[in-house]
Length: 386
Image (tube, rainbow, N blue to C red; front, side):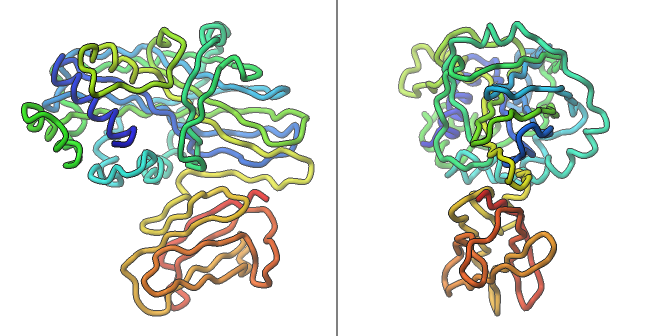
């Protein structure tokens, strides 16, 4: 089983055995510059998603998450000007999520991010209601001496990076009240069934319970304004979010061991550890200014991975197609850059970053379209870093 399946099964075990439910936080980068000039002011959009899972489609034990803590790990010379936030209290996010995520397909751990058009399309309306987060200098001291898993923001790396918080030049902390409350015996936003492959691995006494897991998700949108440093180069910026208090401990890289149920309560507490992601930003006086959006990595059956690339990106097209269909790549001003033919029986084609003459295309943002008889069936945006 992959990590997502392991977390799901562990959540189920605790929910069944202790009937209290499980809380987790997931931090996703929605929009972030991947290139900038030294001293630029950049804006960053993130979503911190609080999730609660419980058996039987109702909240068994009341939930009270008073606050949200948010930390930014900065390279030397970088500064945070401000962080704003907005809580989408009235949005039944878990219901809408099922429209874009097939829970029967958990082959990759970034299914959630790959199907993020839904919440990204709605971000503009939430910007109007944002309010400032309060600076919390004490968070940096509390965060010292920890080791966390950090995921690449746009799926550019398959495995998480192990990060020692003391190895980052500077952490800047923010905290604000969110008052996420789920009343005892209140219904969850939606009810889902775990994948058949996961249910089959459970003891028979748990299998029926696995067919009705209640889920509530509360999105908190974060808007950060950051000034880049003067030093050119490739820089990593880290982001961490957690509702309620920060967890105690030092090592947050391990996941629950499903074979050891003797300390399941302690093991499942490991899931409520907060969430960390990172973004690599290339700065220099001659770079173009690029911004990567999670939403643009996929459009229906058309996908580009990675969406930000230097050497090549793999473009996946619909499997069921007919006629003269191909992939057309254009610059943002509409100039044709390259046409890629798709072999019969194939559903992937690689763009190596070259134009029609075979020369390297200039770094920038490009529109990749799946075309049938000169009509674009779907399009995505990719960023060529260099």
